[in-house]
Image (cartoon, rainbow over all chains, first blue to last red):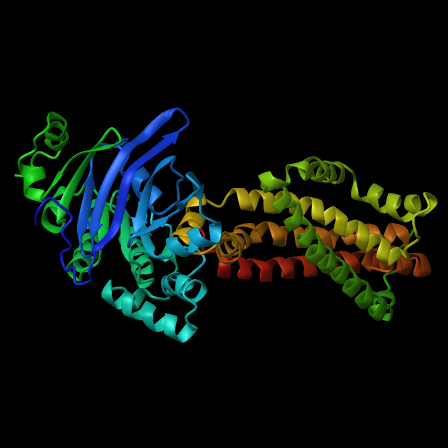
Length: 270
Length: 222
């Protein structure tokens, strides 16, 4: 696949799901995003890599409007989200609109964040009934289907505290994708897991990638990135420093920064 | 001097004792329910930056109540307020009012602590699946908080039940008052106070037992 955002299975006309232009984000005096541009096509899997503090997670949180940002525009399916232009002024959209837009974007967190008072099945059903307005029966059927897909049918009535980290994260992924979002954001979803549990989560993600899910993945799992991502984006100091196919980025890094970053994964990548 | 036991005096007062017990439980339950509503409201005020103007009055309420002996509050409401021209309540209403206001102050602290201990990431994951702020509150924050504070709630219920003994000071016919009545009527001091002690103990202990089972059923937060 080429370095540009070519949709992997772009049947519909435009094919661009996420388009971010010149995103600037400050925390107080510190500018953590210094003009991010990124396009993600339908069915594409884009991996964001970079040192901690490079702005990967912050960027994902801006896309999901969990953070406000000071400049730039993000479009989902061509529609600006979070902010709009009101006579030349940039204005935050009303909360009800933001809530609706957010439901089109799935997010999976590093720390799982399953609702602790609900079973695996009920965790998946909550958004389906309260946000999508589906009946309990319908939502239950969808939850069961996704639990089977992530291999947790026999754990559906377990509470989060009764599940391992890997199982919790698989439920969290099912909860996000069951909403049928246009895009799913994965924020270092294996970083909090014991090494022996990483594989089961990556397997689920690989399966989703294969089925044509549009995914933006922040990850330090370079083997996963090189085998699943269609495009790798290297972020450095709040900017997109380099991007391209996994082989271009991971095997032939152009910049010194990327070379030294990848040097840390020596042995994982050959 | 020899003391002659006569447990008949207790059996003869069974209906009075039962009534006293029911009254005590009823007053405690009412204070817990209404006090919880007050406490939840005050805790929400204290955790809302938008309602900052109300923080100081709520804090004063909580501090005044928590730093006064309940018996003094009971006397103040029953004897003091009518003298100050505030409409007279009968003794049961007066005590329930006092106990409720008292419970509300303690519940405020319980709920405030519960709300503060819920990690923001649960709310964030609610927002991430498209729940509105209100939905996050009702479907995530509130149920999680209730599970966190459940042990404190049951402790408070048992405390409130035992605190109803103070109602005897304004002649509310609850259990302690009944014991004093048997004592005065019959001079069977040991029987009178043994029977109510056993009753308090049995009820508090069974209450604790049942509540612990409920807690275990809902203890899904680690």
